[in-house]
Length: 324
Image 1: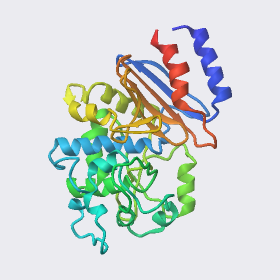
Image 2: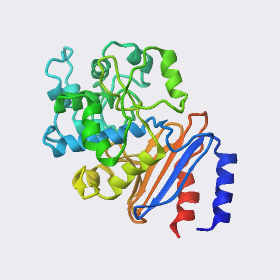
Image 3: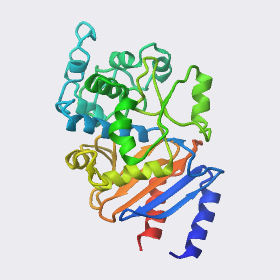
Image 4: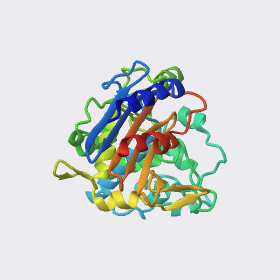
């Protein structure tokens, strides 16, 4: 490895990307690079925002593998038989798990009413109340509310708290430790959690103790790399099939296109020819997988305004630097 180029790269990161906390680069399962910035270290977890969605996609796949969910074509309301559908409501009754995974579910709003959602006593019910209205099948990215219905589905399907299911079936097999529930009792506590305190770790829960699906998970850059490597390995980890290859293949291929963007099952498709895809979180948090180049790149970042494009950084700087 050309140390001169590495030093120039690190100087550029420090000057041009002051919000980056850590970067890990792996190729063919070997770690080529790991470094931390802004006073962060290997044992500091980061709130990865919407990267959480991609982790939850994996958990849905595991539940399917176990037969706890029959199919992504199951209707959402199959899991909530006690939910009272409003008179005249028909669209909500046709929404499937696949619609939630591909962001093609319709909602009764133009902009997410996330403040009212967070203030509600039951987040799953509040999300269901907002589901429906428009036509099913059009891409409508839901940053906060939509994916939380998947949290409710996981709890109903598995019969246990999401974090327990995740620890047993995903985190512990990968050696991702220290996971626990995080209860945020006020807006101030939520803002403090967003501020990326170095010793904040765990997974946020809603008022019913259900782990969030759209945000709220903390991981280290190495933890993120383990998730990426698991996907690159087709779900295999140390001889054990953690997630079926079939699920990984189908969840990381294009299911819907919006403008120039391509989306799988809560994963963004970067380049179909390269078979590359990514979990992307607000602030510049990324798990990037390039199947053809056999590479995994993870970036953990602090949330600041006007974040520079991390995918561009990976494609133009990091991937070329470590592909040789």
